Image (cartoon, rainbow over all chains, first blue to last red; front, side, top):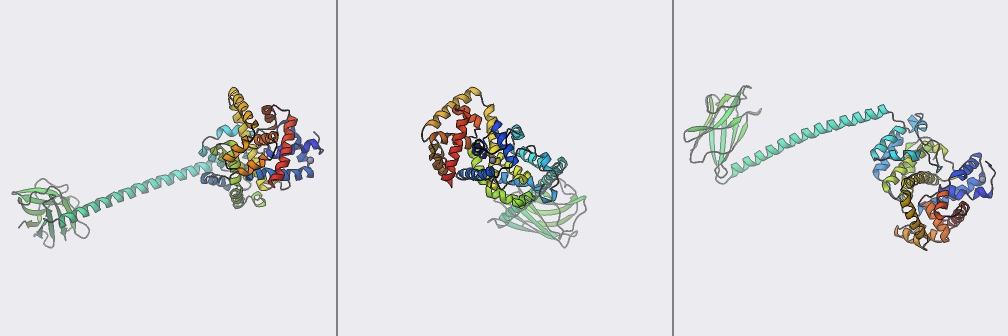
Length: 287
Length: 174
Ligand SMILES: [Zn+2]
């Protein structure tokens, strides 16, 4: 293993620069360079420039954002502050920089299937401990759960808003329908301050009821709206009042206008009843 | 590079952004599959980070150093995938490939189709046997031994063809 510079050695340098030297020739050049040879260094610098020019005359390909992010992230943990974390010891091809030998990198090739797996291996190499990784995974899982719950809440809000909007639109259509008729309900002795109005649209057989100045009820009680048609009270639904004492009810399948006689509100046990039993607080006759 | 040696991640980012497209362009040509090329690109830059201290400005520019590391890794992969390939099928394909290489202008048309006219023109200035050798070494990553086998030439002939071809390319590409 001579380290003397000669013509035979110089002839190997172009292939060395291309990375295609192998076998005994590769070892010869490596040993010679390791011993130090200014002539070869200079020659290699020029040859490396030629290989660079060859590579440079190929159409460049911009790396995908993903591979860029993964590469930059993989070194971040060993940057400045963690310089002593020892990635050298973990890097599997620690002694193969530059040499085209079939080192551990070739053996690892099989393990490099999924891109995500590759990212994890790199993170591990670059000084991330398994605990760091597990903590990161847990943190991401918690983030995801938080986002999932937030999304569910937003969806619920959105559904409520949509329902409310639909109700409002429907109510306004009922009120503004061409043949719509309104009935005023007056507060009775139990609720003298309150009043209400019902709009009936015979075209859609729907009605909308608005009340104001009703007092809030106990949890075991409810207001129940009725229409009286052909002498019989029919439930139009139960309702609660808002903090300002107002309420509204959308009624489907109202009796025909001709048979409608009156609208009334009673206080009933929570959940409502089939026929009125409690105190009547509002009453309005169809004129 | 000194800042990369000092583990400055911003310097590394600059190194990546400046050189990765050229390195990846070459890797895609060598490995044919972008996914594999990007894996090798990532391995190469990680190696550069972990072994920045081995960079020797007397022998290469930072880009030249990165290209050599990328080539070594790509050649390892090409060799192990060639080793996996079915021998019979490989033999048949290689015979065809060698025939194609021997047709004048074959590399030029291949490269021209890939829009790398500068490299094609530079290679075109070489005698056929040198061009074939360099093309197989540079783009297909065939080592000396593999070249001698495939071209059915003595190792010494392969060495001198590459050496002569590279000398001429150096002048042409300067
Ligand atoms: Zn020397």
